[in-house]
Image (cartoon, rainbow, N blue to C red; front, side):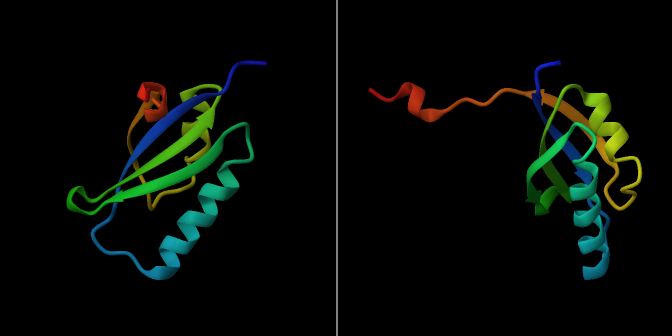
Length: 91
């Protein structure tokens, strides 16, 4: 089995959405997590109209396949990331 990697998926947010659309998109993200990928968390960047979502998956294509039906949140990019823990630098 392939090692799970971490990814940040950058989504463009639509100019106007309803609460029902946001709820439906969130539920779609949870459902998408069932194919070998896992949605961990998101951050909103209001000034850039973007949503940054952290995922765990064996590879980027698994995430792309998961998100094909989530049209409210088009993918701008997917970046492989590695965490840096500030406690590593404490003395």
